Structure formats: C-alpha cells, structure tokens
Amino acid sequence: MADLHVHRDRLEVRLSRAEKLLALRKDDLVIPRSAIRSVAITQDPWIWIRGVRVPGAGIPLTLAIGTWKYHGGKDFLIVKGKSRPAVVIDIDQSEAGGVADGYDRVIVSTTHATKLIEALRTGAEEA
Image 1 (cartoon, rainbow, N blue to C red):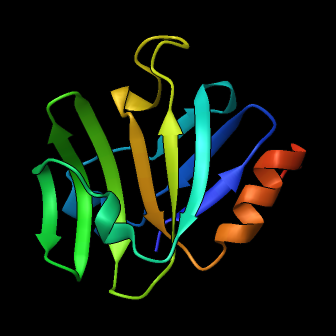
Image 2: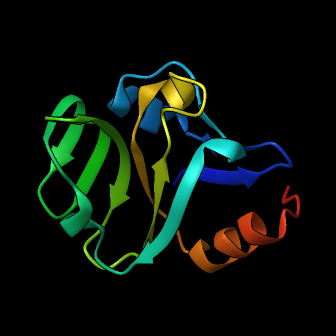
Image 3: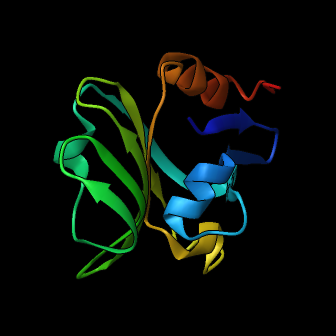
C-alpha cells in the first residue's frame, strides 16, 4: 500500500516497487500543499473513478493503479479492494501549471485517511 507523508510544503505519495511497476512510474508522486484544492474521505472510491486507464493496471472493483484519462485531464489512482476507505485529493493545476505531474485528482486507498486529513488541516508534519 502507498505511504502518504505530509510535510510543511508538500504531500508525498510514496509508492512500493510493485505499485510503481503496475502504474508504469519511476518516481513517487509529490503534491505541493498550496495546490491541494480539497481532500475527502470515501468508503467507496470506485464511484470517484472517471475516464479510461492509460497506462496502469486495473481489475474491476478489485484493483486500480495508474493514470486514468478523462475528457478534461487525468487522475492518478491507487485503489485496492472493495471495502477499503480512500482519500480523494483534488489538485488545482492553475497554481503553478503542471504540479503533481499534471494530475487533477489523486485517489489513494488508506486506512489512515482521517489522520491524513487532520495533518493537512493543522499543517503538522507526519513522518
């Protein structure tokens, strides 16, 4: 499962080797905190998925890892399982143009969604 790390100026989504392989990515994803427009917790991340997978790996209602392109842009997903909660992070691309590798939304399954949102709200650093 991806590790989410909140820093004073950024949110890091650290991917495991397997996740990088499935997503066809070489690097972790870094999102400047100033570019985060909203963060929400969802019990059903599958309803948030939009577009088609290009590139990445997907098994319906079981696994979605990689880039999903839709008419207006692209999203990055690491969604695992049918009943795992996830965080949905919307990114403002007008902030600095091309932040977070150009993704408009990042959806990550995590059991620590509440702690993540709390850390983002308070500005506290999480190791």
